[in-house]
Amino acid sequence: MAGLTDVLRERAELHPDRVALITGDVRCTYGDFDRRADRVAAALAASGVGHGDRVAILDKNSLEYAEQLFGAARAGAVQVPVNYRLAPDEVAYIVNDARAKALIVGPEFVAVLDAVAGRLEHTTHLIVIGGPPGGAYLDYSTWLDEASATPLPETATSDVFVQLYSSGTTGLPKGVMLTHDNFLSVLPLIHDAWDLDDASVMAIAMPMYHVAGHALSICVIYDGITAVLNRDPDPTAIAQAVERHRVTHLFLVPVLLQFMPLVPAVAEADLSSLRIMLYGASPISEDVLRGAMAMLPHTGFIQVYGLTETTGAITMLPAADHDLTGPNPRRLRSAGLPNQGCDLRVVDPVTLADLPTGEVGEILCRTPQNMKGYWRLPEATTSTLLPGGWLRTGDAGYLDEDGYLYIHDRVKDMIISGGENIYPAEVENALMSHPAVSDCAVIGVPDERWGETPKAIVVLTGDVTDEELIEHCRARLAHFKCPTSVERRDAVPRNPTGKILKRELRAPYWRDEDRPVR
Image 1 (cartoon, rainbow, N blue to C red):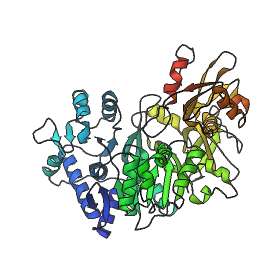
Image 2: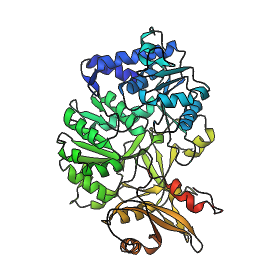
Image 3: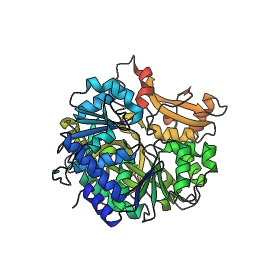
Image 4: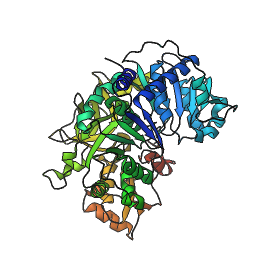
């Protein structure tokens, strides 16, 4: 089987003049993109980067980001995307942990490079995209121009293609190694599932340091279609890109879907070209989903669920299951059915014994999409990749009688109150159905009698008392699941993909307790 860089070569030979990537006013054809990847591979080889070496990149979505991914792989190396929202100390940790030989940064991040340059232990080449001639660092264009073609190593599809770092919201981030084979096992399924054809145009608004943004960019090349790269995940810019380029496919995280209908420029934009709206990467409330569907009544919605460790989506809830008037409206709360070739189990998180249909436990998956492992972390790899090919997702959920998966929460976010398991997402969904609640989070806080009880942290847009919010939940949930206290905030802290930072919210309440903060 050909690797992903060979797939790019084939696309360039078949459709050299077809536009592959659009960024701003720049339109790069498949023929040009293939040649650019060759230049990157030559420049890396000339810089002493060889088979298995890591190349870090700190930038927003750009043509250079994409060509670095394929160029590094063509040189036998591995791209290491770095979250551009991280502090300099966090950036230095990832670059050092990856032992990256080169670090490429976008023009906005030179100050970060200044802060970390003296602390990088393995990095011999510091390169700035659009860097000034004669500056402290190599200019990207000059670096490419000065390289000459060199023989490149043979690569296998089992080789690591990209090393993405986990978000690190509960500890140090881990390097997730994803191979060519991991991507090639899921890409053929996407064409039909997402209704792609030669005329499809995919907007990539997700940052490419995230598995969703990364996988979408690879999907575009695999299918030989056109991508529009959004440098920032800004609702106005996204809507303008959809209108200008007649985008047919778009992936958004729920927090963006929540705010899109509230932005006047979005309401004024012509979004009629959108055939498919993909969403995932964090939980979504029914109210947010219904609002997005009302905004785009002629667009098919597809939910995807997966992890960085599973090369992205392992389940899909197709557009047909988003029928609000159909026989199974509860499926709006589902993450869908497993991909072809993916097996799911729900187990007790302690004993790993299988649980009955409908009972909540930890989700395990067995699929060729499962990562090769964590970079230089054999114990973490062994505890996540179990015998028999199963991967522990760390997510809690259940399977219904038809095989649909329902996600509740991260296992570590589960609240144990008086011996009863409470999954915050269920409580959050009840809270979000109140018209005065615009955002919320539920955490466990210490309680002398019950060990811990749920606490609601809410962002409000209307007048409501704490007691009214608790009663609202009691009308929808068992009483032991309902909040025993409420805290009002201006905003709920989230990471860049929209996941609530539960550890940050819990910390003040558990600081003086014997039990550690999860």
